[in-house]
Length: 75
Ligand SMILES: [Zn+2]
Image (spheres, rainbow, N blue to C red):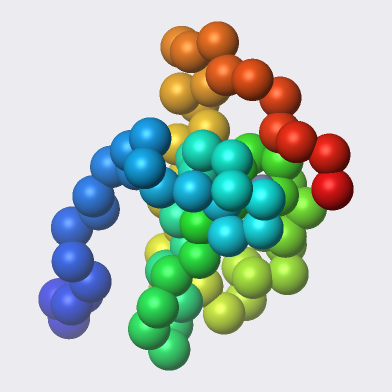
């Protein structure tokens, strides 16, 4: 049994949260194909909901510790 998923590609500054447009730190690869990008704020908000349908979740929110990221804009 070999997973057919592509190797993880690190998120970059051009990857933006699908919800608010902030820098994305979490990528959710869906079981049915496609992917969602979330900032750390929306990842916390939506991750529990998407976890059952996610094939893979790449959480790079630890990088927040290394950069002085601005707070997400208000909703
Ligand atoms: Zn967001």
